[in-house]
Length: 127
Image (cartoon, rainbow, N blue to C red; front, side, top):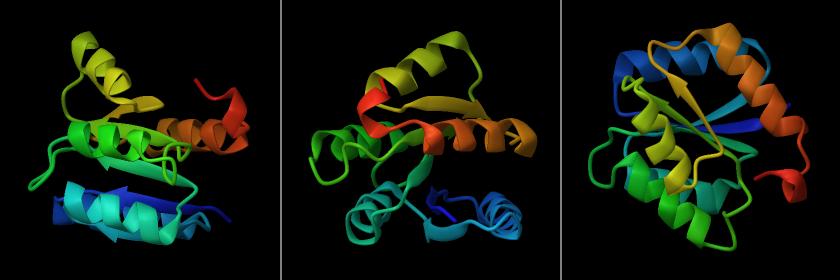
């Protein structure tokens, strides 16, 4: 099954989401801030990244920009996770390089659909 990097600073969100993903067979790697997220993306080569946008040290916007600028991590799909659900938040996330966007609280069925779609799309075909 796929390896997912979950970059989330809120312990309750991190614990709940990682356990639910692991029960569905995913391997979940955890990072608690954007800086650690960038390092783990480079060292672990996950199949997909779930990126909280409101992070300490380096926020999710900047972490995503750095990952997409690095040839070693540029092709890893990133799904933004944020409590900010306005249209401009979606556009800002996509503008930073995120491949998709989902809101918190996470609706697992919807998020799993987005994860599945990202993992099934060949890298060359991703926007």
